Every structure is written in structure tokens, then in C-alpha cells.
Image (tube, rainbow, N blue to C red):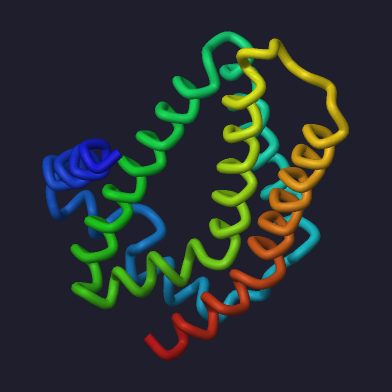
Length: 171
């Protein structure tokens, strides 16, 4: 995972500073607009449901064709590389303060997503030798995973934008 994070940093640095500072969510024009934008929570909810739904569906489909440990490693590497790229872009635009912007942009929702994903894959890895058990404990574990994902989506829609706007106004 650390190698994927470093690969993300390397990739972002190879893109060049102009590309990193001109395009994407960390350019100053976008952030200034976002800080004072009126958020349509209904549209945002549908958009986040669509995006996260596709990501969860892709993970579930991959997990059906490959071992859970393999899919987990792939997802960890993709997230680590994306996080490395995101950190470089934020630091290129805002210096050390960019780290704070990244963390404030992914929290609190990613705490829920990571907890739900970790729980899901830990259940899948444990039950693989038993070829998909149907015990009540497994069902409760999956229900808790679903709850974590729902809490992540709700916090991404209703909590994170408000916090980020407040931080951007002071930044």
C-alpha cells in the first residue's frame, strides 16, 4: 500500500505543476466558487448514491470473480495511489495547508466508508473457506457494513459540504 501511495505521488509529479494547479478541484477558482455556492442537497444525494453505488457494485462484482484478499489489495492500492495524487495536487496549489484541505474534504465520510469496507472484506475473507456461509452472525455483519455505507453517504451529502465551505471561507 505504501508503494501505491508513493506511485501516486510519482505520477502526480510527472504530470507537471501547470497541470496540477490549473485543472481539478484544487484550483483556486473552483474553491472560491465552492465556498459560496448554494448546495442542492437532493441533487447531491442522487449524485453520491450513483457514484458510490457504482463503486460498491464494481467491488462486489470483482469479489465474485477473484478472492476477497486480492480485491481488497487492489482497492487499497487504488485508494492509496489516488490519495498520493490528491496530496501532491493539494500541496502544489496550497503548500502545507493543502494537506488540511484534503483531510477536511474526505472526512468524516471516509471514516464510515473505510470501516464498512474493512468489515465487509474481513467477513468475506473469513467465510471464503466455507463457501459463503449463511449464519445469522454473517447477516448482522453485512447489515452493519450497509449501515456504515449509508452513514458515509449521508455524511458526504449533508455534513462534509457544510464543513468544507466553512473551512474554505477561512482558508
